Image 1: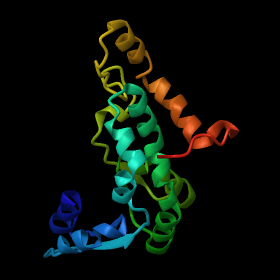
Image 2 (image 1 turned 135 degrees about the vertical axis):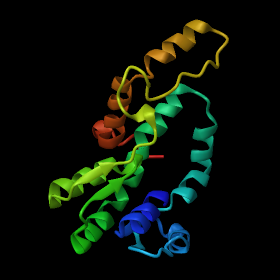
Image 3 (image 1 turned 180 degrees about the vertical axis):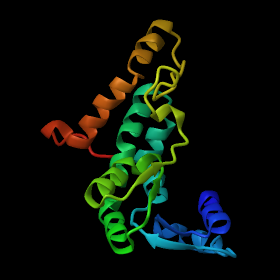
Image 4 (image 1 turned 90 degrees about the horizontal axis):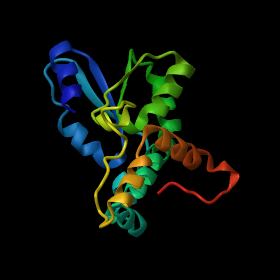
Length: 180
């Protein structure tokens, strides 16, 4: 919202914030600007309700690299239900640019490819960008066996995350893995 406020107030842009319905009053509460404007558009989903479910609470309480990889791999899939709404608003409003966060990358790319709207990623999680400096999951030393910790570290790579994400997104036809 700070970026939206700055673009509106400092540059006079009309900024549309597309997010879950539960944040409507939050966005509208911060939309009072002297120049430009900030408006809300719903895109569906309810992340808060999803993460309050028992299975999600259990997954988040597991302090293992494997569960971190599963949650990271399924995070983007969770937001795919918002794709039709984002495409609708982009077609209807024809924005000059889409600014997207971490979990909306695939949707932003889809909109860009379909409608030719430029996109800018506002990625504040350094671990999600492939690099040797930042693995996708920070290893957790949770075992009394250093060998097991080192073995888990081998699975905390961008390559391992990419493979796991592909399995979650496509299921490899097994029908066994559903997003958390």
